Image (cartoon, rainbow, N blue to C red; front, side):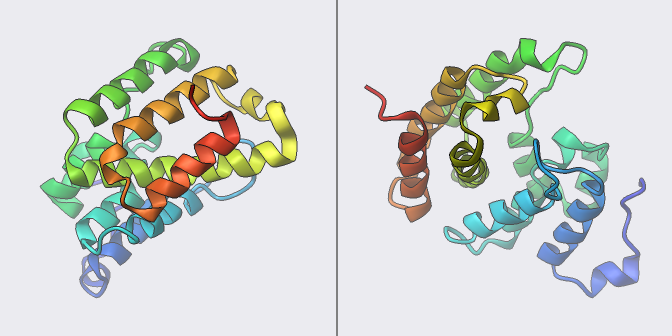
Length: 201
């Protein structure tokens, strides 16, 4: 089943959420956040903490911890489905971009973001929207914090180096998730988007 397989007896003693943390930690070992030495696993854990302000559904919280394993590690959908079941696999797939790895990421950036925004507007379940909001809020916190420290040099870290394109993406996601506006984390996300990029006029 792959290098991330957990010992069966060990797994039985852990909650589903704990299993997800162990699995994601192993999958993201050695990976750091862009432009930093922060271990990547800090981000999925923050995403789960944000999601936990909206729901106590353990499968959603497990999916939050696992949301990047298909996109950014060598974990396969088959492996994830065997370990965590079809619902968590579906939720993680909903959070996974088609990277089109045969092309340079800067070439496909706009198309990938448009696909995400279209999905959130037209197809996404409530659970998928919770995960998307949690992910984007975690990212937006990092963006805002780093903007205060390095200013526009921040955008040099990304495949898409145009600040205005990031503003378009974060604002579009905000609008696509507006049916979650009763939650304080959506309101925090809106505040950060406006603080970082200004109000959309």
